[in-house]
Amino acid sequence: MQKLIYIVEDETDILELVALKLQAAGYETKCFERATPMLEALKTEKPSLIVLDLMLPDLDGMEACKQIKGDPATESIPILMLTARVEVEDRVQGLELGADDYVTKPFDSKELIARVRAILRRASWETAKNELRITEDFKLDFNRYEAYLYGKRIDLTLTEFKILQLLTKRPGWVYSRSQILDYLWGNDKIVIERTVDVHIKNLRDKIEDYSSCIVNVRGVGYKFEPPEDDN
Ligand code: CA
Image (cartoon, rainbow, N blue to C red):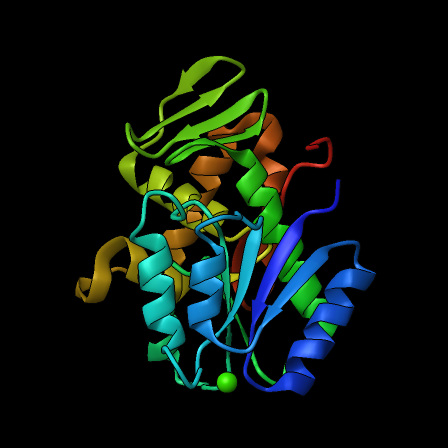
């Protein structure tokens, strides 16, 4: 069955382009030029994903995102923000309000589809709130800070666990060492970036067969790539 994706964008040419690209990739789409009718539609229908523009005439994309993520009936629907703004703060704010990822306009349609696929794939791993079943053999429980490999709990340090939590938040998304450090220790970091490599090495050793999921992108940082056999 085709997955339904809502697209909210007031610039009609972009709206049409996104819809065409998503349809070509095999998704069903529903278009909205305003946030309010989309929020209304959510009361009776739950799409698999919402592509949400940040700047909308009726309701700011951030505000719409906050409403969707703040309602237990819709909080699990992933949101991909479209933003024309390049300021990093906006991106971070969008993600803090619960958007699952963002794409900056003007965007490459291949990149957009890749982000959509990654978000939907991650959503398919979620068995419950804050629980990921990456495969039958590899599970993460973010409520209890526990990771399981082949049915056995792995003994991860809190730092290793948090790195895994960050990387699996957006599979395929590359985090720089400094972003990883910011996530771990905020601005109080007195550690050097190489520390990340040490934690990653230890983490990889512990997740055994899944170590290849944590990929080093030379000169940039690290990302989580879904395992090959993941369906
Ligand atoms: Ca707009």
